Length: 547
Image (cartoon, rainbow, N blue to C red; front, side):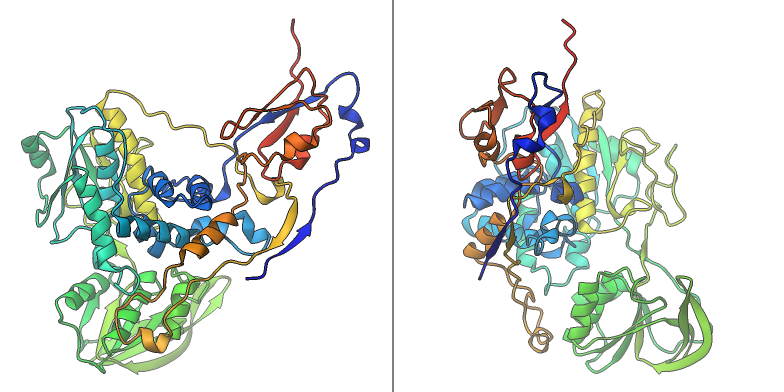
């Protein structure tokens, strides 16, 4: 792959620094760590820049352990995350974002291939027990972090398998089950106890019987939203989750059946692509336009490429027998409005994918607990509900954009607050550093080193099976992508400041220890600041000498 370079280094010119070359220093440089935009955008709170630096050096096992400090599911997230880190990546201003999720997937797959265990210091047992209700990404993540903090954790799952919507809702063509099951097993191997086919119906009773000191609710959102229509349907109308249960039980319609999927969520896209693989004829109807659609563009593009018909601005108005009357909509001032035109579509079934709500029966009657109209539970700044010791997170929180990555972040945050609660302390959220945006960088050169895209099965081949559609990357490609990182906001010991300083006021402290300033020699000219490519140096006003 051809890589080009364009030198854009700012000249070292003291003629432009008269304010910093006199007998009195008015400003001084300080080394500072800023937040990389990839880290800042990650809902799971991963230190992406740190593990990418280990990957740059080819130390993938250490990179794996660094990921596990925050996220127990790198193989899963490397496949299903919607990649806000890549949207925030400063490399977007240069050529293309780093393929972060692909590197994470490579590292995780290497870990599974070589059976790398999760390494962490053995914690001192706290003697406290935590009950987690729901074995989805949020519940399992909370359990993972709580065990690492020395607590005993038991997870109760109403279904027959752990994973929540990762197991039930994400098809194998995107998330192979061997990856999902292996990463869940890694958590169980750390000492988390899992109870399957155990539906908790009386929270207070089970908490008391089990001797639990705290509870984390992560039951997800599994109730489908209904729609209004007139007429007498003569075809099955089922919710998205129910269709997925039918699929697992091999109870789906006969091949060739035409199925209308109503909704524009990523779940609707998943369902349509599953239907194609089952030999059905899926048609997606969505009452808004493409900009309003909750699904990401790439999800809709992949569905369309596989032969799924997607019709925007179509609102179901009536269902009589197998005939569906659809209102044609148009956008006015950003909202869909009926045009008066109607179409009739014949179908063998309808799948509703207009969003999910929460079944609040488990907690709605607990003293102090507040619920939203969709069943979501209200929590405070410490992730706790109105009932002392009962915390919550994941898809059951109102107002959250629902995704596995956000659920993982919820579980990690909740574990910190639960730990503090169990120890009779208050968790102090650390101050988030300023983000090192692209305009803060002083890059030496503009490179043209585009991202290495992942290979994909051709659509006409992909629809023939549930084989994984998107391929992983090679070792060489993982190294290449990791080396594209600009190390935004954090010193990587490039010696730019050391070589540029005209006063030799910078002292090297040895590999891994960075540098320090000799302020007896420093004139405050700011050359080091201008030559730092990653903005790990800030110029501040000279402190007032009060002596």
